[in-house]
Length: 419
Image (cartoon, rainbow, N blue to C red):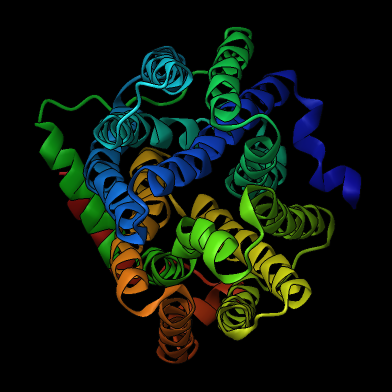
């Protein structure tokens, strides 16, 4: 079974692409924590951590929708390569500013906005590229391995950043991120992809965005999955943005302790990601709901405990739940979405994951400034658990755990959006 689930690695284009994305995503998430620690040092305010995340939210949410249309109309591999070239410029500039000691908080804000714009435009193409890199019988394996990549990088990158902050200082993380960009670009240069169907439309790009939104909204499975993962990400994932506050002010463990606090969720996300790739088929929707519940409960316990080892155990569960919820959604959406709509569906998935946690980081940062980080995080965890209750009774979602034909309403919707 493990050889089947890891079948995508037998294909050289996918292996190269996977390694290139590991390099760039780990580097990007290293920057997320390093910039958070930098902002806290400059401003000494948790609210500014929320401001920095919120600045990234608007371009992620807006440009990811445009990026989905672009991914369906242009060569996805070329888009990925050019995006990587462009990304090197702001990364190198910020690394120089930090190393030279000329960095200011407005520089960080400008960097966050620019990189979020690049990611918003390019990530849907990267996510929708997978079917062009492997044969159809290896697609499920590739989706599972992509889930390990995306979610593992989202926790492993911050973990490495925390360790580097404690040993090499701020400049180490920023300079290593530039190196990761170059490694990713070099690997992408050797990737070869099968041509995909490119949508040729005379209408404006806004119609493409509208068609994607209509398709997702009327799809009986896509919409509830996007809403569910959006709620989990909005209320759960912002915890990472205020980890510097917990490390410095709650547990008093400093930058090195921050590295440990970020490493433990990385272990959880990698363990569950590997298990999902190796295990036989599981009921993904019920698995999604179970890990949603474990996510909220672990965050709630973490918020109230002052026992550092127990906090680390809870963070392990949080990391595992982060990967499990997103991987289940990603797998289902890749299976459900039509090829002609996959780029736009994945752009909505990106908005629901990459965008919403940044939106949630602003109120969490403001509440942490007013009430303290523990109480604010506990409130978010409680709302996360409460949001599970109406969703767990959603029959349309539960039907995905068994073979279900596409309903007539979906067929009608598909004809409508192709006009």
